[in-house]
Length: 365
Image: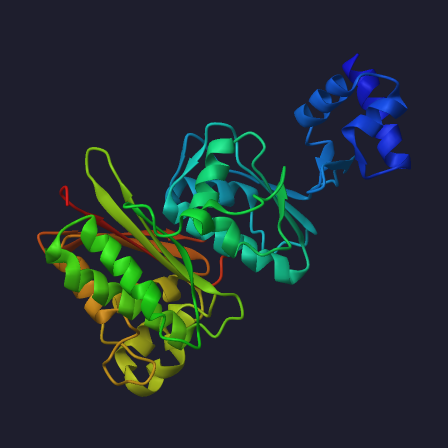
């Protein structure tokens, strides 16, 4: 029965694509409910558009399937590594599949959003399939993911008509929705919103740290990004054994190493000798020094690339932070105000820009 129904529907849609389920059932001479049920169970074969019309699904060259139940930064990168680079491959179409029961941490949603927005401009067909994961779709809608996702990305089964972020903007005590970073403005409202929510969910001891970090990092995107793809920032508090506030600031610009390298020979000769080669190891080494010691500027002024005060605040509260660059990412860990470990992941698939995440572990605020 299944094979015969599939062949009948495929024949109908090959001859007349863009039909609603009821019309397909009429042409197939069977009942509407059976056809609709079959179509929804076989979305790898049949695709539904925003008007509820069905066509044959296009074949997809690359599929990135995220792991369940929790998608962390590391599991996201592992899935991406297994799939291969989506930006530099010669394939023409990409599908991101979110399996049933899958939950996505803010840091992973941030990297996924940046990656999808970077793929579309290079003329690839891009889709994200949330058919099996209604809860994750609801979360992404609530955090403003779809508001900042390029309109050319096909959301399966369909985009929310109105995002929950727009309906409930600012109403959550534990969330600041993704906000775009305007390269022409100081983004004061976004900085204050992030800082205020952070302090509400921790305590007044964090006020200076929060405002410093958001001001510097968002200002850094504004000053250095130069990308036509908007950057964004967001915040979420997580409960559990160690309550923590996770904040992300992301852009699709040149990245830290490429921004600094032209100034090394003139202003930082010792660093130039160590990191003048243009490869992943050299880039990672330069970024590690920049974020662990600070005061390295493309102008040689000692002001730093907008990380000095942020790093000092993170150190004071033993925060963990990570930075994702073109082909690598680094995780910095502090204990008792000292840097105790920098975990390196080199040779991962490309995502352009700088994607920063701070995790502050806090008591009940």
